[in-house]
Amino acid sequence: MKVTTDSCLFGAWVAQQLSESKNDVSTVLDIGGGTGLLSLMLAQKNNTAKIDVLEIDIEATAQAKENVEQSPFSNQIQIINADARTYHFSKKYNVIISNPPFYENELKGNDAVKNIAHHNDGLSITELLKIIKDNLAANGKFFLLLPYKRFEEIKKLIQKEELGVTKVVFVKQSENHSYFRVLVAGTNTSTNTNMEAEINITTKTRQYTAEFIELLKDYYLYL
Image (cartoon, rainbow, N blue to C red; front, side, top):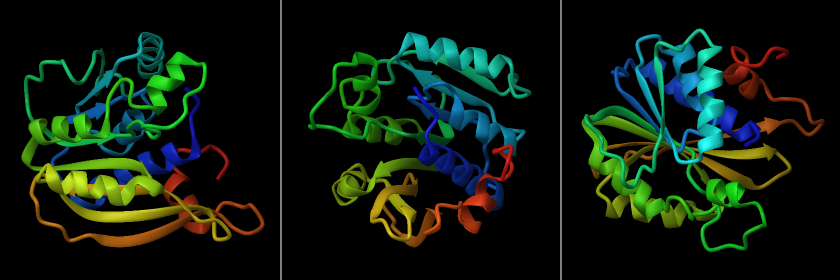
């Protein structure tokens, strides 16, 4: 799967949140980790993190292993080819991150791999939230990248699973666009503090915004 700007933004934001909060990151789970992008970004900012990456697609798993092996963070990241719905977890995690399927119940294309990555063929939001609830430590944190148009629906599902939302960042391509993504931080309690913020990726002149550059400067070569 291609590396997308919103995934990079999400990875940088999660890494920043964990670094600033001084939370325990000794055990991290990346559900549907793809080619390892989010875990590599997290490891870059948190050198004590031990990260398990679950990925159902065999080709993405192979690419993730190659990416991790060629990085300075290979001792921090374990790539696992498995279905999160049936995998036997041996521990609770301090942090769980996921960029889950976006397009449940919408039209699908002809590419089976992309359908699993972008639709709910492999893992529905409801199933994902249950996995998070069952495997997140009592004081743990979870982070999700979600489509804006499904946020209100998914927020109700989060509450139904007795998870809490602590921070929400609404994302626009630019100030001329509507919201299209939401970055969500939450906890393993039903308490909601729900701090809200907003970030634009580019300016009206299609230059990266100062806030985007601040988040991504340690990952992009030419910011």
